[in-house]
Length: 84
Image (tube, rainbow, N blue to C red; front, top):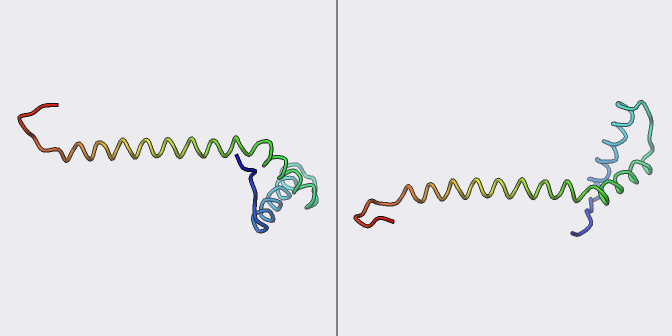
């Protein structure tokens, strides 16, 4: 898997979320550099877990849609004397 990379705006937003979390939940201030380092740590070490969860969810959705599509296609079948 390629490393997870965020563009400048995404990084700025994520760093802001981390800073808000520390301030609101832990009653601590964290600077932008430590917040970005924490973000990089999670992206590097934990990112694959979140990425894989997204892949699994997408696979499940596709399977469900394919099952529904298969049912719809079978619904188009016309009756004949030949049985399957």
